[in-house]
Amino acid sequence: RRVHGDLRVGEIKTCERHPEADSLYLLTIDVGDKEKNNVTGSTVRQVVSGLVKYYEVKELVGRKVVVFCNIKAGKLKGKDSMAMVLAASLPPPSEEGKEI
Image (cartoon, rainbow, N blue to C red; front, side, top):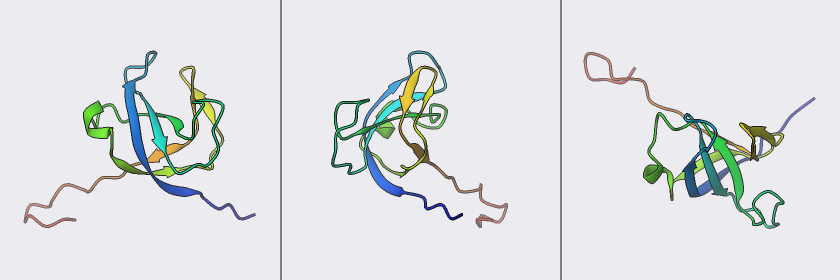
């Protein structure tokens, strides 16, 4: 069975701390959906993300991110999450100043 991932570039419209979890953000992300959803009442998706220790709120709003859109929606600490933000980082430079 073959599964196709629906990866899209989306723009983070809002970002706030999750009221029930210190390590989570509650994001709204515009991924180009045409129809309104029943969670946000608009075309943006609500996503719960664990990016608190990597980014400040002001660094995320307006940022373009890759979003995995066709995962099963679920609840994280009581809030609906309708997608997953994909994140990556570069390894630290080697001692010679070259990337590994």
